[in-house]
Structures are given as structure tokens and as C-alpha cells.
Amino acid sequence: MKKFVCSNCGYVSPKWFGRCPQCGEYDTAEEVVQRRKNREGSPSLFLNLEDAGEISLERLSTGFSELDRAFRGGIVPGQVILLSGEPGIGKSTIALQIAERFAERGLVVYVSGEESPQQLKLRADRLLLKRKKNILLTLENDIDEIISSLRNERVSFMVVDSIQTVFSSDLGSSPGSISQVKNVTMKTIDFAKKRGVPVLLVGHVTKEGEIAGPKLVEHMVDTVAYFEGDRRTGLRLLKITKNRFGPSDEVAVFELKENGFVQVENPSFTEGDADLPGNVLTCVFEGTKPFVVQIQALVSKNRTFSPKRVCKGVDVNRVMLLIAVISKYLRLPIETHDVYVNVVGGLRITDPAADLAIALSIVSSYLEVSLHDTAAVGEIGLDGRVRKVYNINRRLNSLKNSGRIIVPPIEEEQKGVFEVRDLKEAVSIIGGEILGTPGAD
Image 1 (cartoon, rainbow, N blue to C red):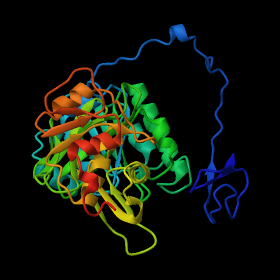
Image 2 (cartoon, helix red, strand yellow):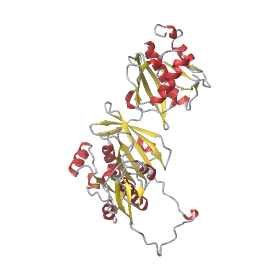
Image 3 (cartoon, rainbow, N blue to C red):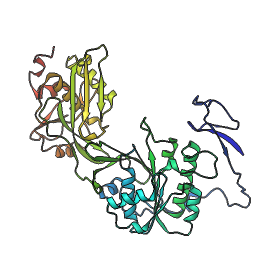
Image 4 (cartoon, helix red, strand yellow):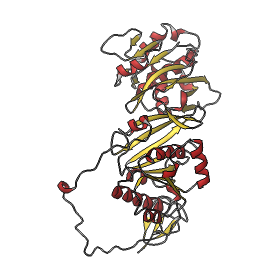
């Protein structure tokens, strides 16, 4: 049976179309031939839940204790992981390092759709891999041929690098199309589940920050991990955004060195210039791990009628909200100035506990007043009040080497910790008459 699928959005039609009625793109119709399956004599389609059996949750180490922690103890047999990130961020490097660890247990298959065996050998030599004999490389891009050739092999781990370069001969569309990526992923998952082989799928990220190919691939796999970081520092963060075998939102931190990635157990995203105006420390949680980060802000006079809002590592909409709160409750004309906010080290934070630090860094930069190693933790509401955040004691412990720490009300008083109820009180702590200084008009 023939059907036509839009290579851009996945729209399905029994007839050819020139313009996709769903996304409006032209010349995206790809013909797909579906084979009819004979169900005669097949067993029942349904199974009683009581008879479903159990899944083995044996955890297999990746070779990185921090990554094992992010996966809640390691990788489960049959687990399918989608690893994505920008080009050149290090996806293939860390995939090869994980593959070597699994080579201790048996045969590892590395499906390379983008690099030659000589290129992979060069990388393996640079990484000083010792178990290269147990890693089999293939340049075959047909997933059906790959799975068929592994029928009698005992595979401990498989890497597909990348999912956009592999295709299925069942379909007539080109590799990387929505129909091909979906079909290849389904067949890979079927192979992983039936054979109990963990599979790592490498996927590219588009300019918009989405995984190239259909978004539905993220819903099909067991685990989705994003590899990101600042190339200037060599630090990389692997964020688990979905995990069927444990909690999501965990983070593992790595540093790229000459011989590959090494894990960083206690990272600190700070620099030695915290005494300068516009710098405030805070502690945020990514999953269950606390990170001490340095927030930097720069407020400058605007020369046009449209002030700039430039943010790196923090949501620009959140910063705009904080600017509005500062302008209203501190009566500072921040809304008419250009505001730049940066998180040192390339970390992207979503924890609202960083609100107070962001707000104080903006005020510090505007007034050109140094806060001298001040740390702040707290979420700011639209009414200017500072709200309590979870795990405050672990945050305070992480910030114990800071000068002074400003937090919302806590249960027990601690030395060097100042409690505030709203943004005005926070500003009064960093300088009683700070709002009366020149430039605050």
C-alpha cells in the first residue's frame, strides 16, 4: 500500500501533494510503501498484565561514576538512549569512551555513518583506548542489514552515530527524512528490547536547538540526554531530560582534555572577579546536584528607543520579569537601560532560586557598587517578595566559603547568613543607603 509522507512535518496522505496542507512547505511529499502483514495463525495480540513478567534492572556502568549517578546507577540492558548536542560538542568522543567500557563485557558494535574507520581509529588512539579489538566498526547504513548480520552475535552494546545517516530498505525515502528516522528508531528499539542490548543513538541539534529529525523520536526512546557546554572552557554538561528507568533532570559534568573526557565531581562555575560590580554568587540545583555559579550583569545606557535584553545561560523572559520588579519596587529606571546577563562557565540554569542573585547583580551593575563576594538564593515573586526554595541547607553548605549569604527566612540562624522577606530588604543589607547614591535617580 502506497502513501505519501511530508519530510518536514510527517503529514501522511494517500495521494501525492505539491504543498503540504499541514506545514505549508512545497515539494516535501515522499512516497512510502508499506508492506501488508499476514496475521493468519498469529498468537493473540493481548497479554494479561499479570503474565507480563519482569524487566531486569541490572545496572551496567558507563565507566564514569558521575554519568552512572545521572542514570541512577548505570545503563539498563535493552535501554535505548538518544544523545544529542551541537556539532563538535564531543558526542562521538564520549560515545567511544563509553563503548570501550562495555567492550570489557563483550562485543561492541559501532555504526559509523559519518566517519571512516581510519578517522575512528585516530580518535581511539588519541583517547588511549585499550580494548579496540572488541569494538567492531561498520559503515553499513542499512539498519536491516546491520540487525540481520548480528543475529548470531552476542552484542553487549551498540552505538549508532548518527541516527540521521541510517536508513531502512523498507522505505523509499532518503536517510534523515522523518519517515526514515522514525522507522530506523523503531527497528533499533525492537532489536534492543528483544536482545537486551543497550543502544546509544547519536542525534544532531538544529539551529533552533531541537534534535534534527522528528521530535517524536524523543518520545520513542527510553532516555534523552543533551550534551552542551562552553567550548572556551572545555566543560561539558550532559543533561538527562527523560529517563524511563529513573528520575530525569540529572546532570553529569565533564571536562574535555587531550585524552578525552574526564568527569568533574565538584564543579564550580565561578571566576576570580566576584568583587567587581555586577557579580553575585548563587547555588542552583540541576537534578539532585547543587552547583555554585557566578551571575554577571552589565547595565548600560541605551542609545535607542528599544533597550536590549541579552542573556546567556538564563531565560531572557525571566530576566525581563525581574527588571520589571526592580523598576517598580526599587524605583530604578532599569527598564530604559540595556541589560546583559551571563552565567559563568556556560551553564544553563532554570532553577528559580537564582532570581535574587540575578536581581542583585543587575542593581549592583547599575549603581556601580561591588557586593564583595555576596551570595544570594531565593525566588522573587511579582510582588517583590523573596520566596523560600527547597534544599536551602544544602545550598548554604555549598556557599559556606562565600562572604555573606542573603536568603529568604530559614528555620535556624547561621553566621554570615542574612534573612530577607523582599527585594528591598535584600538591597538594604548590601548597603543601607545604596539606593540614595548618585545615578539612582
